[in-house]
Length: 178
Image (cartoon, rainbow, N blue to C red; front, side, top):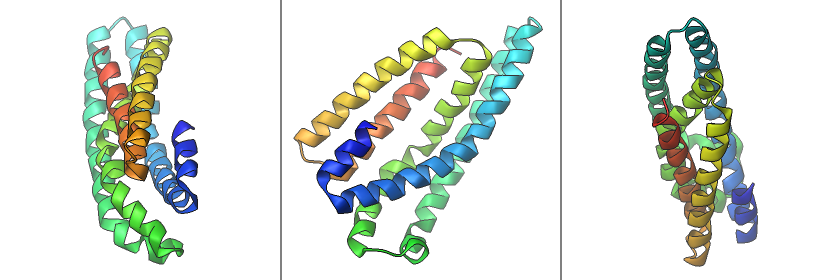
């Protein structure tokens, strides 16, 4: 991804820290995706039965559950940060960078949860053209933030701010469509 390329350009230590954060984010996204799968099926059934109001209610309830799960994962990420070096071993300078970017990476997990849940809701509703257009717009905004961060030499934190902007804009763009 563009973020991984940007991290690699910063050097080996930032790239390693980015990889650790990315893997933690991937684990969280896989847990959160369970709600997206439920949303896809439940919304499709309700819309298929001609019940758009019920489908919307299901979507909002899943968003609430996603926010709760995302917040829980964020708390666990913050609480687990001191144990990462013990679990994974490695260079102390890598974990210094992980610690610097973790507030952004973990802090955006509740909004990421909303985006993931709404991905499922939108797939269940057959909103593929809207999803594609929204993702393009969000990607352009996020890439712009990434490039500004590089120009201002914000390092790994700047990369994760750009990723946070991507997830926040995705959540917002999908939420307005529900």
